[in-house]
Length: 613
Image (cartoon, rainbow, N blue to C red; front, side, top):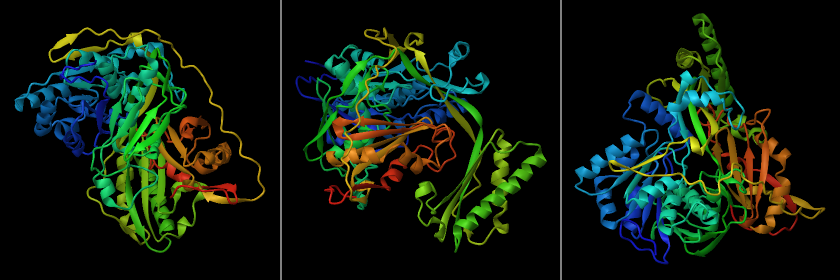
């Protein structure tokens, strides 16, 4: 029987973990909601994305005591919540430490002391590799996705490896009530809790894969309970009162997913499947620090109201290296939104934007500055995001113009913003907008990803003031994930009569970014639809749909997940550098699934259609 320092004995019952944060800025109400639900062993928080690390690195550069997710303290770890955490014996795991976990933990300890409580706070460090810049440079790693050369060390702002679950488990084993980490992988907090309570070892690959999948479902909070769900609801209360997810994990790594009783939202096979396919790349080799997961045979089953059972994750190997993300200053960017309402609004907006750029470039030349390195002009309201599938967008009588640029110098962006604003009285009529002060340039913190061998990291675990021994697990380690291709769905039969059907009537979908790539997962509403969807969404179809976003050397890959009757699509070099650098209106590709679902595919006449849009 497993037992944690809180005194709870689990026996045969599942471990109950609530997911309270999916990003830095998630709703502060989550912690109180989950504490009110009661019966939890852990609450976990994920605050870090690649964009977030860049923001936190910039904050630490201004203030050495900054660089962590302040919302964790001000929103989650309030005096009232801390009191309830102590009373219930709930343990807290969070990567809110960002690029400064020691400062985050110190501030948290001060809050705990002010509340008169006795809670042990641990930190996990060792992900920050800024002190090894010269050594890393000598190894000259290339960017793992684009092959770009290592950036100028003088411009590097942060370097962080993605740590796994076992350092957090060590802190729990030593009696920590709250663990604060730096850049651990999003799912590591959940996996650490399960490994601690069930005694999972580094070689228990299938269990680790199941726990990691539970963490992957929890890591984006309400995206598993109805948020960003394809079958959206028109009722505001569905979203305003949405419940945060709760995973009930079993010793074999399978789990149930539910939410607090009485909360709004939805937990179903579809909502959980959408989150499962979110940002996973190759589902047969989803690489995490502690285990490479094969998710192709995972099944998701509705077993009750707002409750599903998830099983079938398989661990296939252990990576010998950790993904490491470096951010470096790559010039400046800036822009502004303008609105136009009038007949031919789109044409007026484009004319205004081109005139602003013409003025700005003339001013750059007078100042002896180079031209903009990137320019983005998007007229929203004309279906500009739909590319070849836009329908009558230029007939819109009110639009939003987004004009943005990148430049090596701050003065270059200031010039664009000044000249665009100054054109206001010399513009085509219909210009309007709600705005305050003129926007300011912001540094571009570009992303550079590479692999760091695990043995090069010096991970340290401190519980309160004392360091505890930690030796990274190495048993069963391999340097590469095995390739186990999953066969494509069977080809649909040849038929003579077909009709066009909106894809959204046949599938659910979700998309998101990984660096400069976008992952789009589609789940067939009925298993019989998948062969037709797979056949229709070939490379040519995908290039037509996303061609206006794709770079010339972009690669498109498709993967089959037979366990949940799904396909995963990976588009590389599609975001103009990714969320930390892109000027796009959707720099993280969150709407790409919607663009795809808006298309139509051919089905046999009379084919039974199920589901709803």
